[in-house]
Image 1: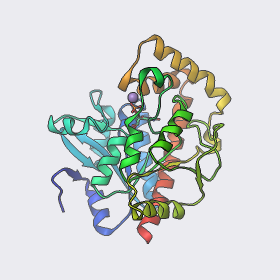
Image 2: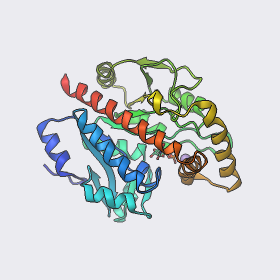
Image 3: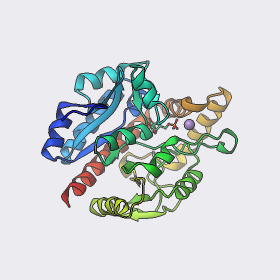
Image 4: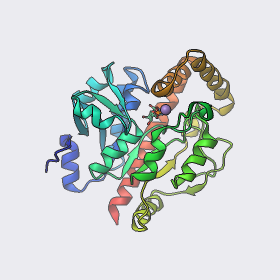
Length: 304
Ligand code: PSU
Ligand code: MN
């Protein structure tokens, strides 16, 4: 079955025909979140992890104007090496497709594409949120609005600690987005398993998360769920170590006048440099952990 708006990879098409659960994956993390070749290695490992846990991965991107739901390996490799890919959020998706350009989807755009293709579960590293100093800059990621209107369950390791996490939680509460910590009481802090903040909600197994997703739809409530899945403890960088690094990266961003779409990629790169690559190792570990949980949730959703 073909769709006028997107192309599926062979594997995704076969999986959907067979009723195999699918987990969507974003591509901004590949083009703007990590350097080559670790980004490609990470993308392949994430796909393998989804398969090991019983689902089929669908990495989403726009290549020369075509929206792809699932990439062939050669396409994944080419994307990981591209320097010119645009960063696509809700505002950018249609323009990129209409202009025949190539772009990587953020959490917001990946949710839109996943929903269009009938995929309800999406695993990533961290969502965008309210940036520190947002009371001046108004920099609040479109990811938050998207969670409030598109019915996809997103698995992330919390909001990145470079953000203003308390404000991010406030906005999500206002927008009616369930923020569910997985297996612990506190919100994870991306590179660290624990933040100081209590999570609004907690769930301990994939089946309950799948049920809550369906219950939301049955109640007629729009939007998705955010599952905050802590990084495995053996892979974390403790908060006390990360705090000064983050402070320094934020200071540098301010001094260099970094704004808008460049803020998140700049901060991630700066944290990578300041931790001499350790942030990247942790980032890869948490994405893999999220991919595994995403696959288990997708399997539960397909059950009943
Ligand atoms: N968090 C990461 N790595 C990333 C991103 C977030 O650890 O690459 C990306 C995601 O694609 C997310 C986007 O949707 O950054 C948020 O960007 P902004 O803050 O400009 O909305
Ligand atoms: Mn922003």
